[in-house]
Every structure is written in C-alpha cells, then in structure tokens.
Amino acid sequence: MKFLLTSAGINNKSIHDALVDMLDKPIAESNALCIPTAMYGHPWVGPGVKTWQLISGNSDNTFVGLGWKSVGVLELTALPSIDEDRWVPLVRETDVLLVAGGDALYLCHWMRQSGLADLLPSLNAVYVGMSAGSMVMAPNIGEFFVGWTPPIGGDETLGLVDFAMFPHLGMLPYNTMDAAEKWAAGMQGRAYVMDDQTAIKVIDGAVEVVSEGHWKLLSP
Image (cartoon, rainbow, N blue to C red; front, top):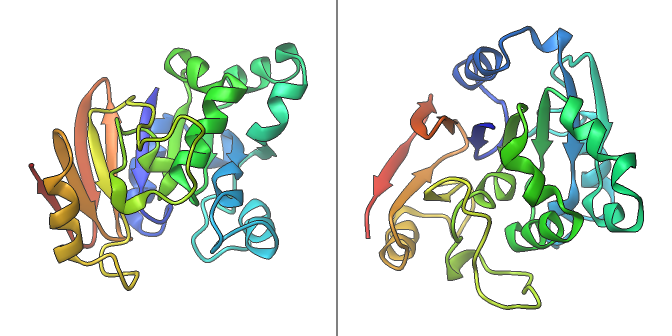
C-alpha cells in the first residue's frame, strides 16, 4: 500500500496534491471507502453527531467531501459477523481507504478482529489516515495516547510503518512540544511530531514529510 498519514485530514494544497499524485488519477475518478470505527472508541468524537458529520462530508476536518467518484462506509465492528466474500472484494477494488481518527488502540483491535489488518499489505489502494487512523500504522503509540484498553493490554499497533506519530501539535491543550519530547523519549525508533497542516507520505518504505505547518523528527 501507499500511505498518506495525516494529523487532521486533507486540509491544505500540499497534502491534497500529494494525495492526487499517489492516486495516479483525479479524485473525481477514484472510489473511496470511509472507515469511521476509531471514532466510537474515543469519548470526544463518537458515537453520534461527529461520526455522521465525518461520513457525510460535513466535518471541518474532512477527507470524505473531496469530490470522490463514490464513497462507501466500511464499519469494521460489523465485519466479523458477515462472510468475507461480502466485503473483501469491495476493499480490493477500492482506490483509497479513508480512515478516521478517534482511539488508535480501539481501531487496531477491530482491524485485527475484522481481518482487515491481514489484508492491508496486499492492497493496491492508497491508505489515508487521520490522527488515530494514521497512528495505528506505527509499531506502537506510547502511553501518552492510551485511552481505550485492548483485551491484551499494551500500546502495540500494526507496525506497517517503522515510525511513530504525535499528531495535533499545538492544536490540543495537552499536545505540546514538551509533552511530545517526553513521549518520544519512551518510544523505540523514529518519532514524528506533527501539527494539523502536516502529513507523512510513505511509498515502498520511502518516507516524505508533506507540510505547510510545523513538524519535528525526534529520536529516543
């Protein structure tokens, strides 16, 4: 897969241009699937109105309302109860996965339970994450971001990229550079701190920061 890991969605020209480049065709010719699952695990964003706003493209931090050819909804909590042939072909045929923010460990749990985690490495789609939807790709998220606790405990996530992310720098009361530096000191490997105008593009393991704001690479 190609990854576009954002803090707050497609909210400036640089990130938008990076997405179009990764798709290799216009957004208006691309089919998308929105995955809102992470929102249900976080008390600030779901369930309820904010989930509807994201899915419908009415959210301020949107990537759904960009003018896609089509947008479907893939709810991971429902997938274990239906046959794989009902949803796997749909995922394989889509051009882009739009993965909402919320709680990264809740999202990780349901990615594994649904089988999507096993499917992701074989897809040709562009994976666009927002906040927790980006963080879930890291090896782990750090204790700073642990909210919902998975049955197995810990802070491990999917590890499909080899770095961790600290989103919303300066955008939330607790997401300060001081907090980020303390978080990074407890992480293994590369750790990117990024504000809402920043994204990280990953193609074939090559990492590129796309930003019209502020970011910093911290090492433990």
